[in-house]
Image (tube, rainbow, N blue to C red; front, top):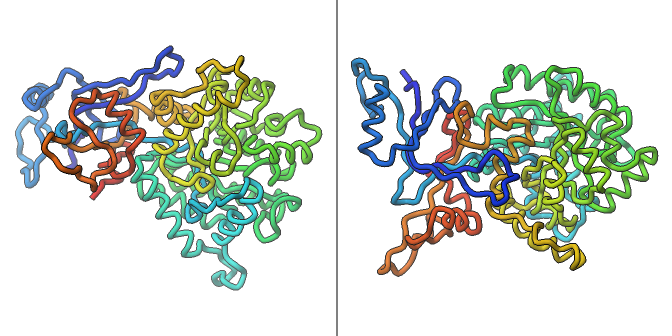
Length: 502
């Protein structure tokens, strides 16, 4: 019989619920937290438990006994619990799982191949050819014309899920391809591995922009295939515990007005309405293209709003070149923004003024935007968010530079957790350590401090070097700037262990 609870003991670090505090600080607590084995939610915590002796007393008070290997069922009135400890001597701590609010799963094999391309050239040279290969040619289909996901879809999707989990990503909002079998496969694989995910079949039916070899034949086909994915995911996970569908017009130029209108109606036809994800104002040439293709619209954001695609469940990726009017519209519709700093730099798209978005009341999270972004690591996105914000002030006239453009490490970590949770419409359910939340978390280990007599560090444990005198905030800063997946010891989603470093 499985233990009723898993008890986590050690140091827990997360961020406050609001980023509006004047100086955002880490919440650092040491003690114990327990999670239900039934629903994966945090059922309580006690920050007064500071030693193994106090942990033993706590267990006795609750009537619990630690489950050990070969334990017999007859343990009297005590209830078995599993205990997971964060080791102080290895500077281990529990941190909320990262939330990737924008990632293209089929593009993962192209990571690092952006070259010197800009957005529109990169799509034609690298992205569309790779994504199109996730479908099948007519002669490859099974009897009766049945289409199945090709082997490369299995390989790419298994790897991107494994890789993101290994970097501590417990929730990801994935763009897939136009293909129903391959997109269904991605949803099924995420569900099987236990990664929380929003899965979207990309909609692209505009022959004026989409290549002939890779597009939906019509708006009707685009909508029908999208409904097939929604149906598959609702059958796979009826309660949406782990995997949810998300409508995905790739971006305005790839979709006909009929497709955009149909998607808006489809989203609203469900209760609650379906999530939506797309791109906006990533690149200046893209903005010009949208203006040319939709001359009746006031601006890029207005295009989506006219088709009822700008809602409180909408994720807008990039948002680098928004106008004040667009920011006001996005805020009024309560749509959210995924900031993708690594991709914006890699493709030369520009620097997103995150502080301006936050000041305008817009909810912001972080995205890797693989493979426009070169790394599947949200920790890398945290680093890049800090770095590009430091450069932003230098792009402004001296009289407009305030210093507030810079994001602190704590603020960037907020975007990676609490902010991301709000972007995927799950604020209060994931992103922190509070009673009632799902336990989506990672165990981070920074290694033992170096001694005065050591000649070299244990290089296998990662790049973070601690010397023993650092405070916890300083340790977290070192992790952000020099850490990587080698520091991720274990990952849980819904209280279930989904990754453990060997």
